[in-house]
Image 1 (cartoon, protein in one colour):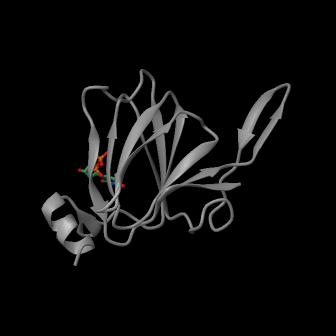
Image 2 (cartoon, rainbow, N blue to C red):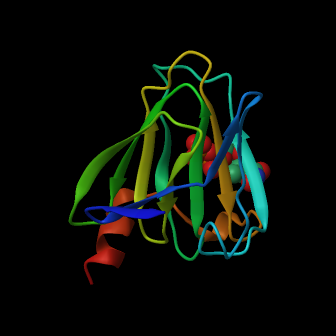
Amino acid sequence: MTSQNQNFQRITLNQVTDERGSLCVIEGCKDIPFAIARAYYLFGLDSESPRGFHAHRKLRQFAICLSGSVDILMDDGSNREVISLSSPSTGLMIEPMQWHEMQNFSEGCVLLVLASDVYDEADYIRDYVEFEALVNK
Ligand code: TYD
């Protein structure tokens, strides 16, 4: 099931729950709208040390908080919105040209990110002024 939170898309995954617990599956191009080329995860995080502060030129990503909670500030150049993730069955699409900042990590937070391509530093925009100029041109 897919739901729209203003400009920023959350995706709720199918959850299979029985007396043994729960299982969620993420298949590329099916449960999320891209083929998965890379997975990485953040853990051992500090609530006082926000991360991110960049946008990507082409990369598509899906972030899902497997444990604990995190707030993700999303900024497309005109709208800024804080999305809270606290469920291992609902994640957030981070599309290209969306400035994002991850903050307020809870104790034990584990944030899994699935990405549409391999790591490429050239795809990052780490300067907010450059980001604003590119999205508003
Ligand atoms: P970065 O994307 O800047 O992290 P965050 O947005 O969470 O602050 O990456 C941190 C470091 O890790 C940076 O030196 C690049 C490296 N890195 C990789 O080598 N491969 C990857 O897939 C990612 C996401 C980061």
